[in-house]
Length: 272
Ligand code: NAP
Image (cartoon, rainbow, N blue to C red; front, side):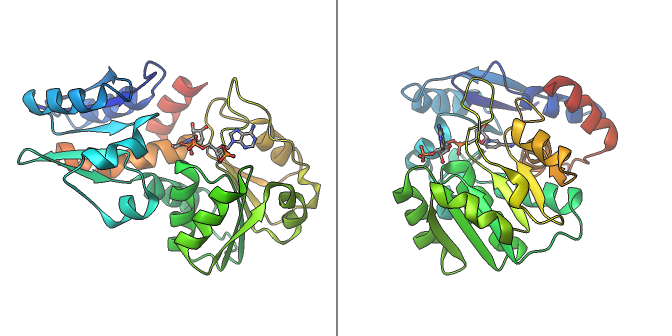
């Protein structure tokens, strides 16, 4: 029996067991996917335990995605570039790290916003998830990506690392950048339950602009509500979560799983 899990602290809120469980049932695979609680200090011991239990791999959520890199024997180019791994594969007793968040964001955006103009993107945030989004936007062919982050030094580092199409701006400059944005992405934790609200007036966005928020608790963040009320195309964070799981499931269980309307409805009910 193939086994995988998600490790994090806290982890009880994770939607990943429901998602992978749905595919395991659909494809009649004899396997399991559970949630393991582990603090940053406990992660090395947990990875050792998963080895002993012959797991096929695991997902990582907060606070492990960046910390885990020093515990891996190898990683793919995307994980190295982003500086974070959200998916681990155990092969011949060695841990290999992948970052499938960038794929998840790009694939979801491609499907939910076909015809999206790709001249200018405005990216809010410069944490682990924002770096995955930046990698995705570059891969999708965006001409210019402006990154605004509260801590300017992190936006500067992101721009330096990702090359000439990525520009670092101050947090205050986000308002003046709106008028040229084809795509606005919130990759900060603002708007998430228990975090502060993102104070941004979307009146300056062009009518063709798409607004994506990777926060998925709540599914419709105040930012997305404002965008919907303005009649703009909105993309919520649940699709990214679903799509990042596709290559992970395939790597562990040997089947490329489908993202169907039925699955999206199942996940939507759990996310609300
Ligand atoms: P992170 O590394 O901790 O980064 C947090 C980001 O939010 C940083 O840019 C931080 O700015 C900014 N921020 C936090 N509080 C702020 C405030 N009061 N004002 C302005 N900026 C603030 O976290 P992460 O891993 O990148 O995750 C960010 C969000 O993405 C989380 O809500 C997470 O749940 C979500 N996420 C969703 C998916 C998905 O599949 N949909 C996947 C991954 C993450 P500073 O640099 O100044 O601290």
